[in-house]
Length: 85
Image 1 (spheres, one colour):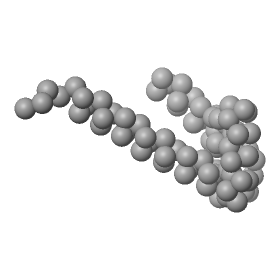
Image 2 (image 1 turned 90 degrees about the horizontal axis):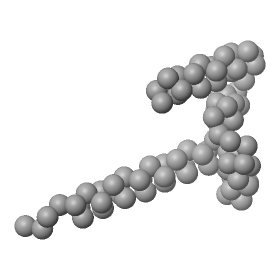
Image 3 (image 1 turned 90 degrees about the vertical axis):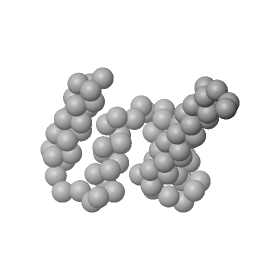
């Protein structure tokens, strides 16, 4: 998995470097586009438009929410595994 991630990062970096001068938002969009499937990207665009945000902003918000939910789920499962004292 780590090797696959490195390949994706390397390809993303090459793609961005070949594209010339870009704004920060354009660069983030290109990075995200390189790793996010088309159907997910389209759904992200719809959500972002509804929220009046850029796709990059919306992606950051949704990733933050997903990470928080994952941590909460992990914490809850660890609590259930511990025997009550």
